[in-house]
Length: 272
Image 1 (tube, rainbow, N blue to C red):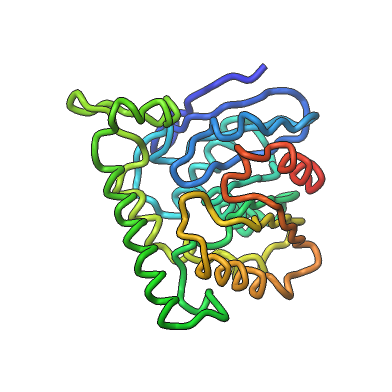
Image 2: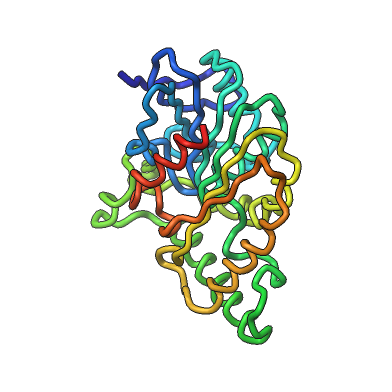
């Protein structure tokens, strides 16, 4: 039976859910705007699954988004729960962290990144085969959409929308309800080069790795030619990876964890 614990002997409090058991440990890292609840449907038989709320998310504490400090947060969880050298599975932002964890820990047995390669708001050269004028216009529109989304996170959450957000991601301030993460953290993450493109780091991995990429447009995205070009760029840049880094395409969108947990479970279990 799983249990929740808050680690307090660290720079910030860290909320963790541990499935317990004697199986080999696997650490689960959610995406930007998610919580450890995102992993509820991923049941890995025979494994000790440990999920955490990243800093600024869920019930974990606030702190600036610096990748090394976030990796230190993960170190605190691994040390506190005596996980040794866990495999790491991450979705989106969590997948980017999984790659960086494996670079910091070459002894890591395996990593899986679920659509955690680069932001849809990436460098222009990452959209090959698209007319430059159309590309730049669509990228400007995408940036405006992300800006609006971030701004909305800074406003109180209407009552009718609160049920759509994980309870552990809601916070009360001055009598109003807000969703985490805060705008400041969202903007800090968006500006980092690692979030905009993690693919180059894959070449430095020493452990077995599975990279899962979706074939459908992200929900809520503009779709169209921009996302087709984005996927062409991802496929182009995943060519020539070391043999121990495997790529799998899944007929899914970015919400694969929620929409297709069975297919994701099979891929993850096979990789581990």
